[in-house]
Image (tube, rainbow, N blue to C red; front, side, top):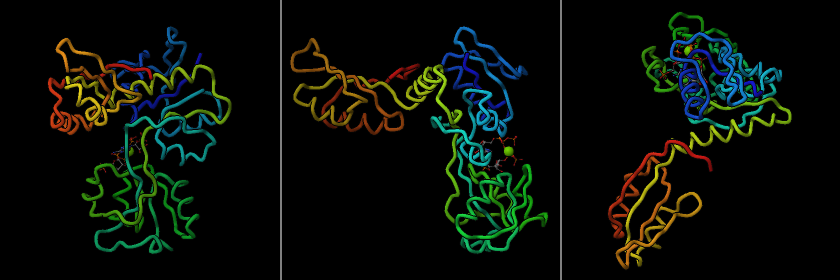
Length: 281
Ligand SMILES: Nc1ncnc2c1ncn2[C@@H]1O[C@H](COP(=O)(O)OP(=O)(O)OP(=O)(O)O)[C@@H](O)[C@H]1O
Ligand SMILES: O=P(O)(O)OC[C@H]1O[C@H](OP(=O)(O)OP(=O)(O)O)[C@H](O)[C@@H]1O
Ligand SMILES: [Mg+2]
């Protein structure tokens, strides 16, 4: 039985649950309060835990896998491994200060930096030889400058609207690019992890690709196939009409319309796009 830790609240919780459900696992219903959820059919057991604690449980080896944020994993300082990036809850982790007054990394020297990610910020500054006074708080970090408990902040930025509302702007390079990740203990993976990982990868592929079908004059197939090389190689089958072929290939979802334009230009017709519900590569 594979033991899997899942975030029980916050930005990671709902998308993690949705992804596991898409991967065919039993999950809590909306608003469900279960702390532990057995899924005997799939030989797994889910533990709903605080997002920040998940790396700690995984690092200690008391669960065999977990879903958390890359930023939370690194901030935990725990010896757990990122096994696969999961493509949701994307954010950057950045320094920000009062609009107009911010500059370079060196300007942080001697300043008070508020953050919920103390380890991450300390390590980053230490590696760059900058000494600062790190003020650790649980949340609402953007308010700390106005309230006078810090000069700068280091926080999660998604749209940037929270920073703007607080009169702050980012500066310097991003400290980190984060997203949800599947993590595992730093030891030989449990056998069941392969199935979990393959299923999650299947969901990622189904989300990232569409299936494209089109008809194409035989002499244009090479040109068309170079536009839609697929993952391994596209399927090309003869059409009843002589001189024409049918082609089927996976295409990155975000390129759907650009690819259809290019195909049409080389002579492809009857171009049809279908969503992928599930996949196993
Ligand atoms: N807009 C966002 N705000 C906060 N965290 C985000 C956001 N977008 C993505 N994340 C990611 O979600 C994780 C933080 O989850 P966590 O549940 O601790 O915080 P939260 O979403 O702010 O929840 P809370 O309501 O407890 O403050 C991090 O990995 C972070 O990078
Ligand atoms: O760039 P944005 O799209 O504005 O999102 C980023 C903000 O969202 C999160 O705060 P949250 O609402 O979780 O409150 P918290 O700081 O109390 O955790 C995060 O800590 C930032 O403050
Ligand atoms: Mg928050």
